Length: 401
Image (cartoon, rainbow, N blue to C red):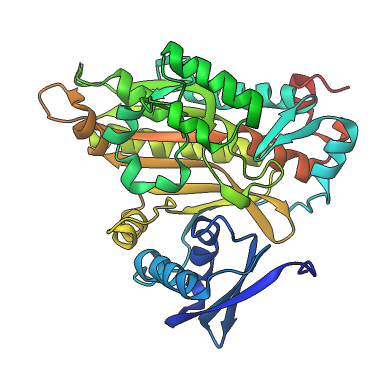
């Protein structure tokens, strides 16, 4: 429903695109302009010909028409329409509970504390521990695993080396500080006392050497940078930490956050070993979810590349080569969220970070990541808040009665 005070701006596309690509437009529109507060993509006869943007103030239609069409032409139009390819479908069909986030809010289990930021308490904390431990135990069944706890900050140079700036500029979150200069501190205190904090403070900041990490694996590749790994074996590293991505107005409940927790596993070694490890671990995770009776599926996916000169080609390459599998669980009758992904990088990060594998050249790598907030949220959507209805193994581990 449109708020009566909202302004509607209709944007016509230069030419139609297939309706099958509508979701690719939807996942990018909030990054086109900060003034956009909502949108509707218009599909008719199997084609998308226009979008309607909502805003609090009138938008410059000419400029927005150019920006929207630039995004569509660069990121979406050249994508090839391919049917979704599932590699696993749960045999269980559950009917998710409605309004779980609202119920969690009423009980005090979650509190929205900022844009894309949610404080969590029980029972989520115990479920966090359960699912985190469960996937780590599955990994340890087949591998000798090195676990690390990484700092919150990551060097900006590490993200640059990983190619993150080119691939995902929309998600970057920089960390800065006041320049360590007495005059700067004094001027800041005087200005703050008079006007409060606003973007003018950036004039007194001179450091962008660090970012908030968008995921954990970049820490791992940075840690192993310049090393040559022992051959004839697979190297497995895991870590759990806070990750941060600017999600604009896409942030909602526990489904999409700016600040979230990832359990990540990184495989480094030969191509064959990495691919086999990814496949075997993936199948173990599927079996685990089936044992819990959870409803969902895993399909070939792609990352949200944005604004690059080769965005469409990278998306097609990921899907064609099946470099990414996305694990999705139901949170509503016709709605799923991605709770994990299984990825193969080939030698991309081995080359970028100078990580060798014996005398075989750059190491091949893959990673598996689980968004713990999403995983726990999907579980609660399917099983509800009454722990008596949970699977026995979850209830016992999470401290339910």
